[in-house]
Length: 402
Image 1 (cartoon, one colour):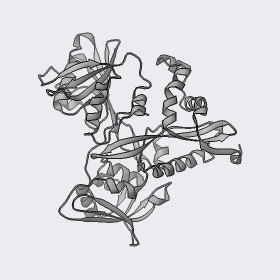
Image 2 (image 1 turned 120 degrees about the vertical axis):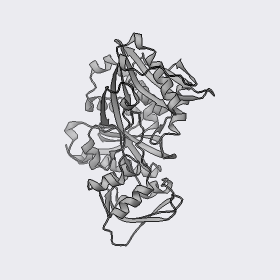
Image 3 (image 1 turned 180 degrees about the vertical axis):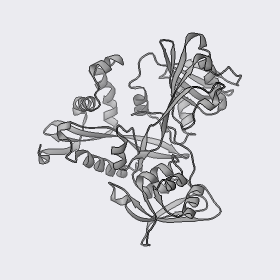
Image 4 (image 1 turned 90 degrees about the horizontal axis):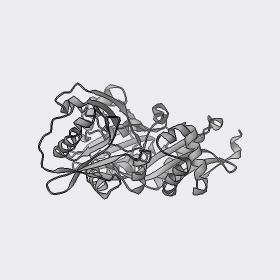
């Protein structure tokens, strides 16, 4: 296929059916899979219609036929108590007969340029190929732990102040609980209507919810779950404090006579086993979401470094596989109150870091010391110590999927 015949343009609502067909082909969503989740083609189109209206979708067209596409959702995330506009990358796909022509590289380049224009200085995505997105500047920033607990291993009930109430999954109570949690949690998505739609999109109708309320009748956490074939499945459990965590596990344990085991997910780097009396449970950890800084200089303007008694400075070469404005020698200055500024430098730069490493370091997923030891940062030990003292260490919590 001659690339000159192809044209890049916005994917408008009139191409919604083609947009869905391309997604289904690329990700092998078969009729059987759809039937298992209770979906039909018309349901997918109806569900994706409002999403496509709000998203920024780019595609390559051969005439009126959509052959390659990428979508960016306008989202917001919390990064160390700061709210950032975030470009949620999704819907990435190209028909195989149009592959190896650089179409996706150009789409990603254009999408990142547009993110910058919309002041979305950070981008998240779920990687179907970690090596591919690493080559494009994204890096792993969060984990997903899957666990299995036998019924006899469930935690014993403990008294806490507060109560659990079962509610509808689409209720305002669930949204209130999540909103309180997200504003206090590093890395979390601030869910709007689009994000909530994506969060529940592929779940079956038998999903249930329970919310924990504290003594002041405030929603401090929730449990999203379903029960099937004597198995208690936990889609997600969030909690603001230990009382909420205990209260929600009390609720799970109350199902002891109904179930044989609990299978669930948690989106943190803290294994559940340590918190259980019988810690001999099955747990497996896997990388979950990736992120990339879209504009390093602008990202730093709002980034909260740790305060110190002295001002700090670091001059280094930053590399980026796509974005020219993230390439070159920079000087990062951090004031004693934790405010950072970046400017281009004419100094000789011997220290080196790429945008992938910078992203995972600033989001707290990996420490400067660890990244230095594995050769991802070239700098002195003194600089490593400075970075360790300047950057908060907390793995992002991200339980969404889009």
